Image (cartoon, rainbow, N blue to C red; front, side, top):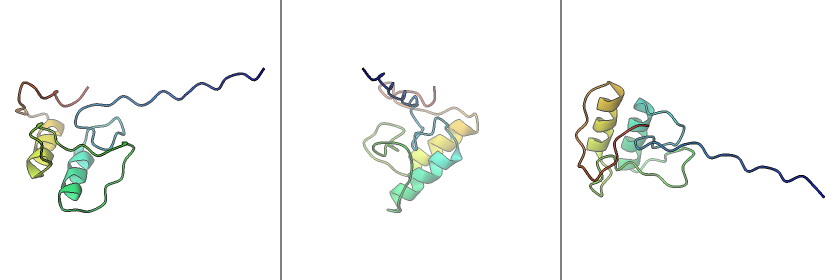
Length: 86
């Protein structure tokens, strides 16, 4: 009987990690901006989610919130929205 091959463990997902590479950085903000203007966005995610503030839109405000997070500044999000990061 063949030995079963274990399934790879998926990388953890962190809100704000829009390219699913397990790092939240300025590249994520740039990918949000690319998406907003209709340019292709690459990443490891099954689908793109750059709606950082959970308002149903992906726009430059989401990119700015990611940049604030990366810079170590406070980010205002609604209570129903998950916080950025791990």
